[in-house]
Picture: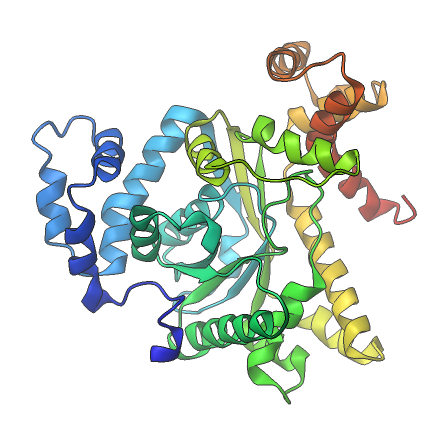
Length: 379
């Protein structure tokens, strides 16, 4: 399938050669020293040099590395809803997106522990420009989304990605993870972009798009972190946008976000799987008048399932009450939890600057606002 060579992960036949190309890279050695701190003889190198499949690479190196990250920087991962998925079955997971690497790694760890098909996962090309990261991402079964393309090039890229997604799910029986929007939700307001859904239908032009979504087994996913490890790094862009200014990324900003996401404090994490949504797809198909309207309705359905499954940690309620100067949700957190959040808040943010204060608190409070919309759509 040479048409996917520019975006696909490695084939198993390419894995060992790729490993050999990075085996002595200082970044890989640092990762493995962190993952296997008691392996003073670096026997991981010997095991890695005898690795010949993506699955073995993920299970023997990525999975224990993730467990180590959770041990060092979180209070643990919980999950729900995976019993709704069938073994040996590929799905299209459409998820809210908070962290560059962890979102998909955490999902795959849950899928692995539940004996389910792991994913190939979308990643922006801006994150894999360094040769080492490009190789590592392909070993971790990522496929590349080109950012910033325009016009005809954008359409060509979208068609290629759509075809890759369809081929992966329908022919290779490999699940696919994609974010509900381009890039992470930096303000905590999880909304599905119609353009993402439209892109997913391009490969089967002429087929009813909603038959396509059913065929791909679309499943909404919610992931929620009690503390966002990259919250302070997201602030400059949020502040610029709130002031109507254009934001220009600094050099290595994406790489710093990647590192902070792995090492930063997260406290509790929860992933919820909703299950497939055939009944909603049938209803939208019956009620909608044209494709744009139907995609708008589908975006709303996915949003609502993601909001429903999002775990509202004490930090979210605290931020909501601070932002709105109320004690409306005080029963959902303790004085100790509020003090801990305030300490983090005051250490990271100029609390006397109203714009900075509002943007930081809104990042945490918006999931509460969205949950309220489920019971009061007029909000």
